[in-house]
Length: 320
View 1 (tube, rainbow, N blue to C red):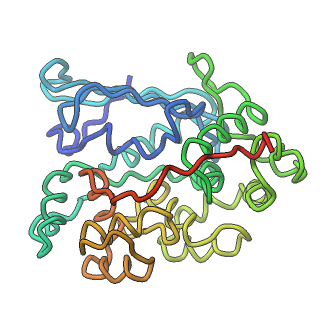
View 2: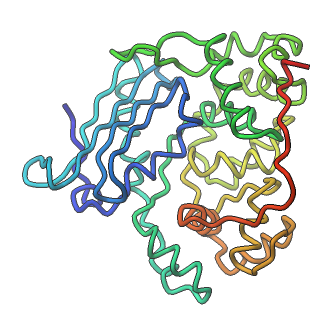
């Protein structure tokens, strides 16, 4: 079985579990499984992801162990297994998903703002991986527009159940992302029983119709890829800012328009319980080029915002 031997992995300078965590959308994501024991660079775990590649469907299985219990040729490593027509493509992409190409930004550990510096020190092993797979990252992100995370995860699960097929390899119940041909031809009303209204159903179908283009777009610089994505109706700033990180490894991508993120940044960096997107970008301006990294490190380090009033009741659309 192939083993990653890049020096970042050998020296365990990467928190592999946390780095891979943004590829999973909910604990019951039917396309992506992640199990982590322990924390930080000393963790052990398994990561399984079924996806569609330029060469066809494939499944990637990454397995890593605590350096104190498992060593390969004297150093810790990551075992890589892949299955299906897309196996070779996924094996080549595996190091990038773990973040071996991301050098991080050590300068953030000396940032003027003490909270940023502390978060950077605590998260120095958190990397920005790059799946190279815009289609897979776009679909669950579009579903997450304007609704709660719990509802989005349930809708993503149901969409995969309806429009996908079993993934290659030995993993029972693991599914590929929805087949783009089947997804593209679904009328708007078909999505309603899943809880997905027309404003999100239409961009899902549109993204599926252009699925073949994304492999080339993923090779572009993030700014150019963002310009391409803006051509898709229903794919706006929030969606683009959410997918450029996990798909392309862009450390500057910020999800402008997020319901909570602006308040988290405002509260953490300025002590303001509520903020606007403009205020969030103003506070992040000193970290231009690494804004997404700063936001991710802050959230990873437990940044939050005060909550006011009773919790809002969620009314699933399919029960209306």
